[in-house]
Image (tube, rainbow over the protein chains, first blue to last red):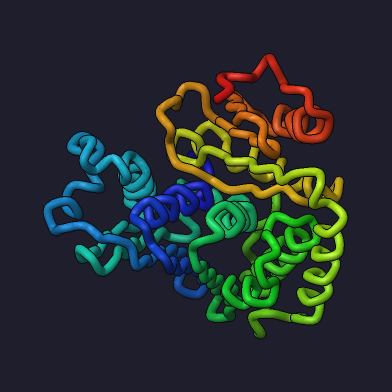
Length: 189
Length: 123
């Protein structure tokens, strides 16, 4: 995968597959510390310690861990090649948290890509999940909580044209308004 | 920064959508499901999803529910899109690029004509 936002989409799908009701996504870009961080936290079924230890190893993943697949190993490799890391914390019955961090300016860091499309895909595609998306740029913050929108819409599907436009514009503007000035990686392709 | 800038906009959207729904109840609901497992994403499913959402927005297509699913075991034919129009059988499409997705919305959803060259199955 060529964009961090595609990895984000992939990892968030794991949360849905783990029957999460609430998923919180954080993307932080900080030019002051030169770090880029992505966090995906869910309240899904979680994993035992043994499974957690295996999920980032592509050669040990078997059918029993199929819901994790190749996504985490790919992202871990990408993070580690950019002075970063990937951690997975999980508790059976409680949920899972994935943290991936990169050196923002690292030459090998893949671009963030189309973050808005990733978030839209998740919100629209899994309406039964409560999504919270936070974007931080040098400490400035945009928070999108889809519960507010869903309550206001009272059952109107999120894939109605006017709702789509509303969501797309709000998320795009929220990211752009908080992006560190020198960063251009989040611009729409 | 506030989470929601303009809740009034959403209220207006809801009212309009409700009005439209009253007019459209006879035409039947359309379900579109995009395969978004690791295989699907790697094959470009997000761009397919984006094309579907953009077309809905641009052409003002009401009454289409778009959702996602994980890997369905046909990884080599991703991106996969499944379309159900009203009571008709579900049609599964493979190798759905953004261009094919736009065709599906226009020809299948819009005109009731299945896009045969990307059809995998009807169930």
